[in-house]
Image (tube, rainbow, N blue to C red; front, side, top):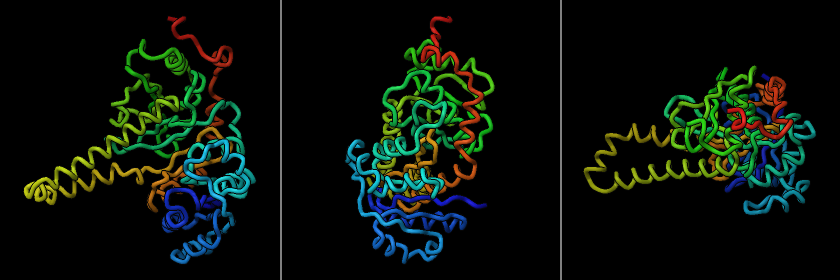
Length: 354
């Protein structure tokens, strides 16, 4: 299999060059066809490459010393898009020099730069940030939007559902993903008007490669009963952080409990295989790689705190989306979406049709 190069923002993330290069090297040890454009300080990247001989022939370095700070406002970062490692990685995708870009840097800046450089696909009003999360079942669940758009109307939610389903078909091998809208209840009468409008439209739509199953409450997201959860960026970001915080709480609670007495420590040794499985399942590095869906190009957001394993997973996500041509799949699904009612008024009035 031949893939386009993947641009790596080597300066992004909490630890920058060392982890980003190590992650790319780990990904290439698993998939020798991967090739990279490493964007950042050439001296630091070259030094990091000394520990990874497998990367030398597969990588080109694009020198850049300017970095987007983690707390930098997107508006300020945009003005420096042509001089920062993040901006140049995205530009490489726009210019066709790379098929995808991976960055662990400032999420807001990455979205702003990506949207300005790549623009949204025809038929998509706003891009959305989607990510994989673990469930009780063997498969992961995809959730979007996770912070790119704080306010969304019904039309946006319908488009997110189409993009999320296409993403699920690629990374989770679901021919007809189960899609639900995040809501405060599962009854048809619950939620805001925009949720009811989006639900009504998705129930009536035909020809979509998904199974729309109504609403899901936040406590059911990780049960394994849904493949794609759709929401606005404000609610999605809160839900994501609540889930991640709960996972860390449970992990820390178990650590405290096992250290509380000699008997508990013995119990830990006996149950260690199970606790290691739990730790592995909850480790965000094993599910790393958020994707900005709806752009004319593949941009993958890695956790800023990701280790080499996490970065390798993010690179693998980018490669998988290139291999299966995500943008073409989304375009085909949008062509099957008859959203005339949404175009007419921005929403369909579900209440008015009851």
